[in-house]
Length: 372
Image (cartoon, rainbow, N blue to C red; front, side):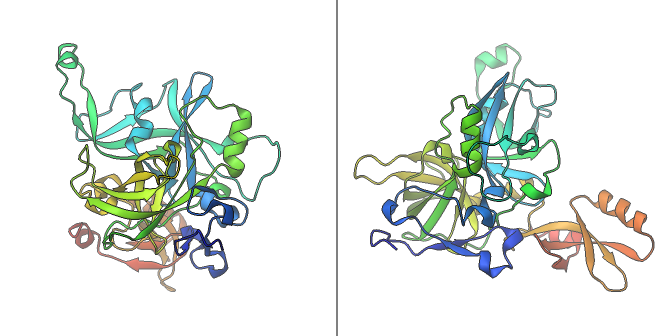
């Protein structure tokens, strides 16, 4: 390891591999990169990170335009990103509701976001991008407020702005099982400290410009990078806007916006929001959305266990005799339908499931909801 490397390596793993110890490896930069942004591929690649962290593209007519980074959080096709990453796409559709949580639907729209999913194994050379690797986003959920715009009012239109730099994306189709990965999200119980080390992942070469087939191959095979940083300030009330942020001394280029930020325990505690790149010998400066200080995040991501990173709330179909949950569903209605198809030896129970396993804790639905 290089003597220039000042941080203790952070061990990162996707939820699906969390119990396989040999896949939990420290993320260390090549010695030539020191503390700078460094590529993440080869051994780390097939550990699953690229199946959880994805490039965000905008489909505009026959073009694909690079936008930023997103990451998968619950095993059911829910992705998090920075709100400003998808703001350009949102301008082309109208909201489906006027409530504070606004759902933007992309059915029938010619301009919509696309996620470039990962594929198993390491890919070299030229290859055809599988159609299923380009996943269309069906909707975006953001916590918005009406923007004060007298001209829009005169036109009879409503303009919205994000309360915080965070958005949820849900896909139009189910993710293929060979392209799925999930990162563990810490929504509570973490207190950041000045001087603490974090690491961010993303696609720094996404620069809001058209992307051809050759560039797509690059992002699919070895376009992801990482950067360590040190927390230098906390802004619970935001800085320049109302988003609670953690300020980090780090090199986070603009294409990494929307990428996950991990703490020293390998848990995602925030999203890359804004940054100022490193210049000459000066260190860069980045800001990460701080999950725990966003009170309405539970509304945006109701599927996550708010207490246990890497766990999700679900409805399980359980064998009455063995008491072993065998199937997990996001919606109660889907669980009941499946239970009926299996017959009377099964029952539906609510609880928390460790993603990628059959580990399950039975909870009382009403009691749990009252605690969040």
